[in-house]
Amino acid sequence: MLGILCLLLSLYLFAIFGRVLLSWFPLNPNGAMATVAGFLYTVTDPVMKPVRRMLPAARFGGMALDFSPVIVIFGIAILQRIIC
Image (spheres, rainbow, N blue to C red):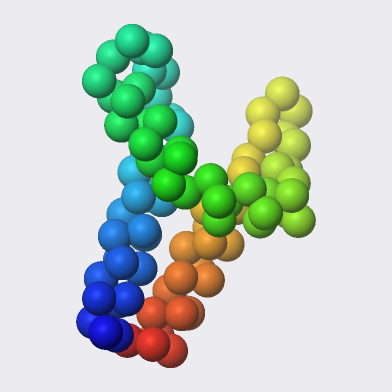
């Protein structure tokens, strides 16, 4: 049972990394990558949105840096250390 949970946590980490990587590139709304990005956003938003509400993006001039993926990744890494 713990092995499955560890696997799911690892897959969730990959989903977050995929979301972060896809956010760096412009996507065609009708393309296949937009479908992948939509799936990743749907899967990761339930965890990312509450963190984003607690820790808003840092503004640097006209740019904003979202730290919520970093916080969630650290949280999952700590959880994996405890469980796995």
